[in-house]
Image (cartoon, rainbow, N blue to C red):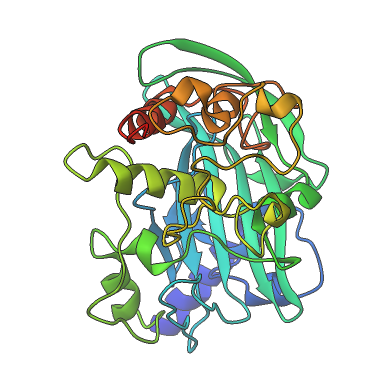
Length: 335
């Protein structure tokens, strides 16, 4: 009877057009599966019911992406484990995958727009964007990216209408490139160290070890936390993937990773390497005590493609994030 039940399960999965479990060959092979369902990350894709060893996670302070909600999942193949790192992203073994679905709540229901995959293959990480169909039943590979008209209400109750940008495959490198190679950003101890997430990975046999003193970063919208810690956490996740010595903005000299202590590298009274329209006539990246005189605020409050920072991933200003950074700069002594 057990054998018959197992056979029926496999038959039903095949009939539904999806594998019964995660298809490791789809991740590690050289092909580019055309549908998100081809990977088998979910036993019920529309309902986001994860398959075995596909674990949901979130970040203490997440990247802002036009107020989109994000559902994140991590997959590590059976018999393998991610290697813990204190500061860097965990070293995920070949066959691992990071699954991140972007969408908005409409009429009380989450509507997915796109799912971005990072696949760990033998030659390195591969980034692929998948765009969901209007029925919300599956997502199709869209290597060239696309734009999707979206209407939503922001946290302040303001109606928004934007042209949401799904990046093309090459644009993924703009944020995920580290020393020229694509690399994960969010799977770091300091981002995952809340709500027992690291312990859950360890218990699932997906993480090789977990020190008792694993680092933790502040939550940007947690008022009881120290203002500077919240501001630095926000800058780290939104900016430091480019603004670090090995990132795409390494030539700027503006390095915003969380443990950096050099005031100049953080932008405090730092002049831009190349002053132009992006400076808005301002002298310093951060003018202590004066957010309006700070290039950082000027660029974050702009949606002009030649001025706005970050350059990708947003068509709106994150009013709440900018407010936090304004308060942080205002708190600095003018001297």
